[in-house]
Image (cartoon, rainbow, N blue to C red; front, side):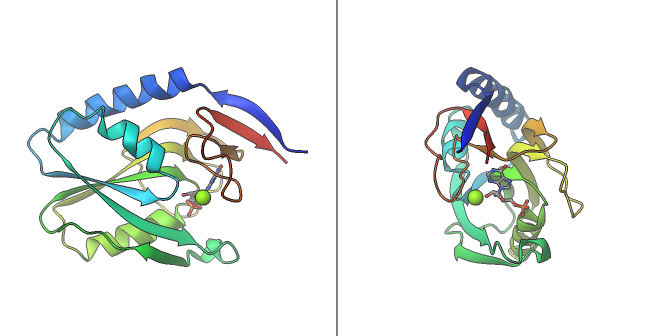
Length: 171
Ligand code: IMP
Ligand code: MG
């Protein structure tokens, strides 16, 4: 039986996003910010984060999913390309969770080809234990050592994204 152990409350999530939103608003004040959500996991985080950013910015989405079988080799498929022009703009990638880092590394490599002025990473969760590649998470709402979590956009076999808080899932 699946067990859902409460880990991060709705209130903690909203407080932390408010804080990160203020930091981003300050850091990007003189820049040309494009928030780029990575589908699907980031959709709830992205929608809350954009409303906590007080400076003008644009939003785009990139669809990427990793093949489970080969995730350790970082094989990913792009399911949606960005719509906006990225050249000479300041791209902030918005991700749900960085685990091994393989998915994000491939996305960064892809975005680099579009010649932006800068690329930074904002993740709801920065999970360390299984990190395989060197990747810097510039803005992280929460740090986590290990575990498998669901809720607030994060899924287990495509379910539980709708839970308003974050839970540690025990299988
Ligand atoms: P990475 O390439 O190993 O960094 O994998 C990142 C992706 O794996 C995330 O975007 C999630 O879709 C998924 N993932 C990794 N850890 C978790 C977790 O604890 N809960 C839900 N999804 C996770
Ligand atoms: Mg997922």
